Image 1 (cartoon, rainbow, N blue to C red):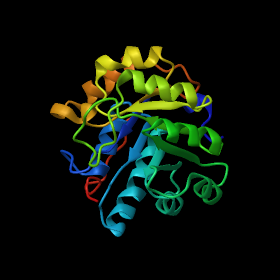
Image 2 (tube, rainbow, N blue to C red):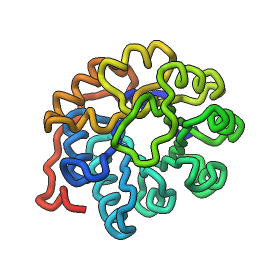
Image 3 (cartoon, rainbow, N blue to C red):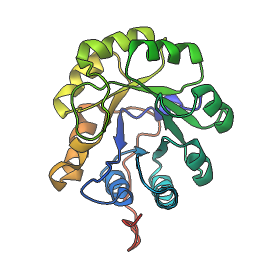
Length: 231
């Protein structure tokens, strides 16, 4: 699949709807702090606003050598040249999404229930999945049933080896147990943006789950255009 092991960064950073700053600025600051994987999530945003923000986030990620995934939209991923798309169970069918994306872009899917993990394993077209939610989070509306660590272990056991990132209220202290159970990483949102200390927050997660892939070089800061935070 398209997600090379050398780019399976353990920390997946998800932009926050109605966060403390616009999503483009979130992406820029996360990348500047060392993040190498950004998932742009803009649920409910107008299409033109979403597309404009996605173009900017893709450019930022390219400058840092970071992966850029578009949540919920294969169309925007293709229009902006993003690395791929992430789809939930209410979005486009995974097999159809793979057909549209082709073999060279990354396709991720959300797994909230055991039957969805089984479906992901059968589909044979996903590069990775997000499994959870671990615990309650206000970041996402219509939250699926909480899984806890035992639920995530169950998902991992039936995914047939698909790399999985735990998601849903992830905190720094959860990293050791999630890593020990065999997940590929953690997908984090609010814990990275909390208190405005993005550099420190991202650095703490990166230190907790260091990555030894060939592409694991420190990110270099780039100049952010005056309107980079607009979307």
